Amino acid sequence: MSWCNDHPTVAAVGVCPQCSKAWCQPCSTRGNISKALCPKCGALLGAPPAGGPGDIFARLFSSESIIMAVSLAVLGLVLGFLGGVLGFGLVFQLIYAGAIAAYYFNIIQHVGAGAAGMPGPSELAGDLGTVFSRGFRGIVCILVGFAPLLIYIFALHHGREVFAERTLFLELLVAGQLYMPAVLLAVTFGDNGLNALWPPAWIQIIARAPGPYASFTMLWLITVFIGGAIIAALQSLVIEIPYAGIMIASIISMMFWWFQAILVGRFIRQNGDAFGWTS
Image 1 (cartoon, helix red, strand yellow):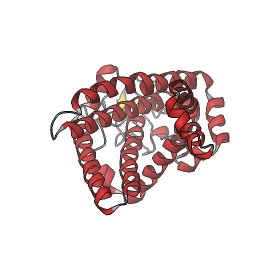
Image 2 (tube, one colour; image 1 turned 180 degrees about the horizontal axis):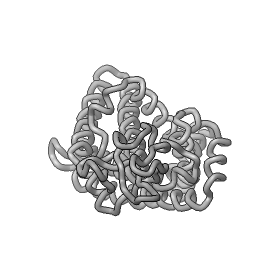
Image 3 (cartoon, helix red, strand yellow; image 1 turned 45 degrees about the vertical axis):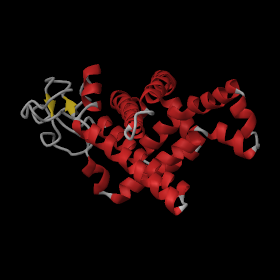
């Protein structure tokens, strides 16, 4: 991570290509990161280095990240209990998924903008309109990503077959994840959840930078399948712990999604210009 030349404890939003000095947002002459100017040279600032693996894990295990993981895990338990008592389980599950998705997109925007650390609880609860919007886009992205599997199960009425045939299940799962990166980038770059439902927006994203997109797709598939398998194994070890097992398993899931969101944000920070994105 780069730090401001005049404020060593403040993260830089850009680096001057002429004098190579890094500047924070207050030091730059414009608030928009894509148009921030060097206060010394007047040159348009470039993106600061995203940092190495240490930056990823520093963010992931920051106090904000852990607090949000624990808080949302508790929320999941409460909503699960209410759903069982009141009989509106699906509604409470959607609320829970929306809360997780809102913070997931908060992380992407936060890291993609070059901000330090992780977004805190106040950022999730501060603007309810933004929270609702990001929660909605997250739920839509999930549904679109699992569309091949969901269509096969519900529209074609093959629920029993797909769960009995493990190979078919994995094929349908992979099919959705192959275009999921385009969906996620279209939603993030367009700042519109409805882009998840508009395939031309996906194609436009891919056409702008095919090389970086291919790299991002590989990264996505690795985190989804290999990371998911690791998380599932860890959860199986803790789920039987009396009283705390479900809670610990939920926190592990949260940390995995935070890790993936950090990777997405770093990719956007490094390649946003190639896709024509301004944060």
